Image 1 (cartoon, rainbow, N blue to C red):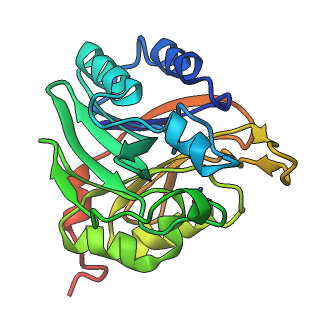
Image 2 (cartoon, rainbow, N blue to C red):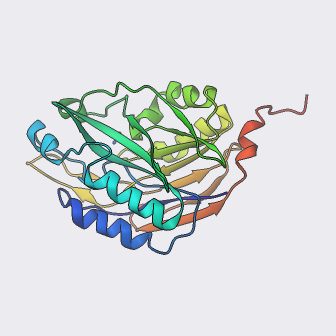
Length: 249
Ligand code: ACM
């Protein structure tokens, strides 16, 4: 199975521009599963609830889900990517999984990070695993990684691969996911963004890149640089994630 990530720098509020960049970057890719960053089309550093509501989109009718479905259909692959989701008066920090036949599922981030708590409603979907044929995937978003229960819940529900859209600013996660993979014997694909945002007089946020694919043995198969756009696809055998014993007996 060919899996990977696309790491890039999105521009705050420029939804069409950001989606065009993703379409262009993936126009020739050959993969079965590709993970994209958190909030990939809106940007991250919101300064008001109204701003979030204005940029948040319904799933599946909003531009991000529609565009990801278009790419998934054209490239015959599954995509997982993050977006600000609007549902009534609520905005969720969500991730959708889409395939050639449409939406597979939508997960709303459980563990909001820092000022996300001012603008987003904590997720109410719980953690889900979806069978995409070659593997079972589970989705968690960025800071969910810090709570081992998120990865463990997905693993107990049968996930072979943790799909992990992110906008990481702290340095701990890339090595931390090695532990998540070891303790659950699963694969993970973290897709982070690069670049920085400084909005509304707030402290500059610099995103740390370092997107990666990690195996159930804790091997980092591929890790991107901190500050460079990167598209990576590697071959894995998802069956490795179903062998849970560490010792032969
Ligand atoms: C984060 O959860 N975006 C750090």
